[in-house]
Length: 334
Image 1 (cartoon, rainbow, N blue to C red):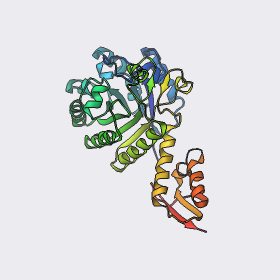
Image 2 (cartoon, rainbow, N blue to C red):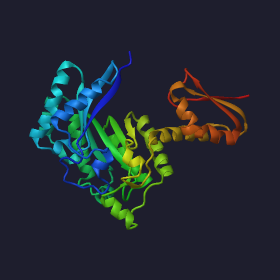
Image 3 (spheres, one colour):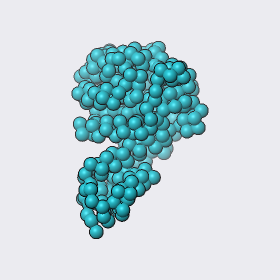
């Protein structure tokens, strides 16, 4: 029996973080402008438990703020709320997100006692110049020290990264991904940098001191990084920010490579790159066989891969084949 995994997200926007990174306005990013009270946390958990299917491994995830920067009493208050659900088996564990410079051995021991299984650090970049230009307030050495300490406690490690930060390049993003892999991360998230209202990055953008990645660039970078992580056994939990109405309506988004189906664009691009490199040059009626679970990505977002290949070959059919796996494919002419 395949066990699926699901998170119940509890967002704590900007809570406990004294740093204002140039890109950050957590309230607008998360779509949440207030910190949930304990009673509201219970309501959020109960609501999700009634909608998550059976045979699902469920974690409570405290996201958004720097959880371990909260007063210890407040951390324990939030973590205590989850304890009855852990004891009953309704949820299997807790995951939190925090800053690399908010990790100590004492904090980790407390988190373990309350059932925290995974910690995601907002690394964003391993390039010190990018970190400084982005106002992160920590260095790559802080990331490495925190990662080593977390892993020494047998806690699963996530290292989030952002692409297109001030001073970033494709080569620097690749090096950040390689550093995440080398640090022993179990998982990552790839977030393209967006210019959000009421941020310092918005000021830099208006002054012509910052240029966003185009959507095409962000998709191309992310497609490369996604495959690099996959090849090295690092799970990509998310690619692109979670869609919200403020972004879709451009209420809070000034500019940047936002798309509500960003991950689908990335997975489509991966397959198009594979086809472009591996398919023969000669035209003809071509049938391509791909893994069953990859058929939609191979055809492409809004069928864009199929349409591009039609232009190249004249006739194309992409079909699922249950015997194929990962990014394997076969083709034949008719």
